[in-house]
Image (tube, rainbow, N blue to C red; front, side, top):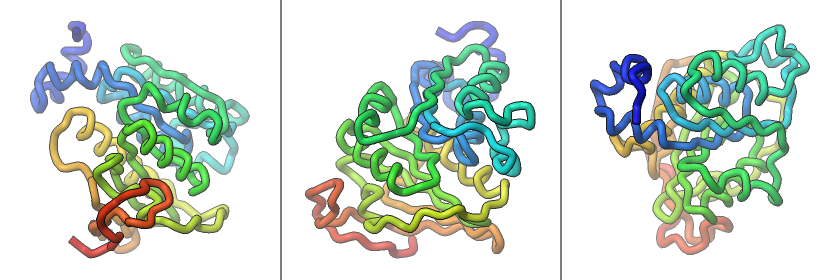
Length: 250
């Protein structure tokens, strides 16, 4: 049940998807893996939208080099665990939501426990080894996964529906080399908000999520394209697809 304060706060949203939709957001739980450049805008916009429980995990502490892009971490937060920095800001932004801050490393041993109660999983990570763990957990639990990745001015977004769409391994079967990559703050801002938009559509069951489509953002040329992606019959993660993978422009 929405309080009078919530009815006022979300008035413009309720105009779009009624009180029933807003109550659905309030009952929802989103697990965000990563509290950095992507995790900050994702958590921020899900919080102001009224997602009832934001569960975020990250192992790192705030560093000076984070401050060009990780907008929920400020100068005063340097040295603080990122999840605690985010939790503080989200509670100030929206006191009606619940925030779970997990200062942990996501591993094969704990990933299923971390995601098990989520309605949707969000990949806000910066390395593919951990992304594959999330992908496998999503497949095992049948929880949708929203993937996002960035580098420089470029980024990508895709929504994985287990048993229906291509998984992360289908599209990226080989682990890219880990690196300290360049990035400008606007890129995770754009990609993170696109991921938050995907989460809201999936939770509200409206619109057309990026199911079976990879969205690619070219920031230098201000161009956004989507490519069809299909499940691979030899995918190591999702096992028994019927089609080979392809990436053909829509």
